[in-house]
Image 1 (cartoon, helix red, strand yellow):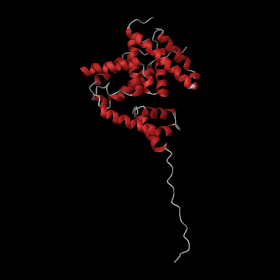
Image 2: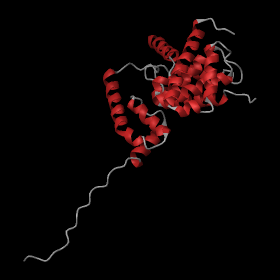
Image 3: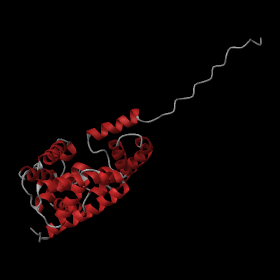
Image 4: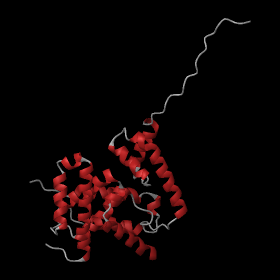
Amino acid sequence: MKYTDPFDLELRGDCLEILDELDDLASQYPLIGAGASYPDLRSSLVEIADGQPLTPARVVNLLSAMRVLHLHGGPEQAMPPMVLNRAARRAQRFGRN
Amino acid sequence: MTRVSLAPAFHEVLAFLDRMLALPEVRDSPNVEYIRRLQGDLLVMPQDEPLSPADVGVLLTAWRYRLTGIPATALGYPPQPEQDAAIDTTLRTAGQFLQPYAAQHSTQIQRIVDDLVEGHAPLDAGDTAALLALVLHGLNIPPRPRRKRVPAGPSRA
């Protein structure tokens, strides 16, 4: 399945962003890169970015990657831009109401 | 191959939102309906089947709140630049003070203190308790120097 709508593209872009951050982290902390779950996290992010179905296993790995980034890199790094943008848009919408 | 379920992740975020909705700051906030809708959306999502990208978006938003807390603006509170700046300074200063001590402790303590340095308050009661434990027991405060006792000598009188 290939995603076509803008929302899907945002998600795929976010996965690439998280992947970059994760690789960056793994280069700083070799223990993360050597961890048993690291290849799984990485491959799930690549698959989601590639438009593969969002199976529970892939989504669980996506959430785990965010948690790893949060634990080691702080809140900003853990947040994909899509999530931040959507939260801001929602806040604006509710603010207007 | 073991089948992976999203149930634990859903359970975690739903429990978090439950805790948040019990807080007056969230329960009485202008955007409380947004948090309730988020919770409602999560409740009807499949936990053992592939999700739609929109579902994942909702889950990621809730997950983000779980990791970093719900920002005041998302709750609909008006921005208060002066107060925010004061809180931010307090958090960062406390974080910078505690950072050398946190380095001697677990990654959880280090993460909480690193968050403080970035201006983020403790996320929940557990984080607050860990921070208090660090302040109460984790600071190596040098003992006060004891006053030297002068041995009683022969009286000059």
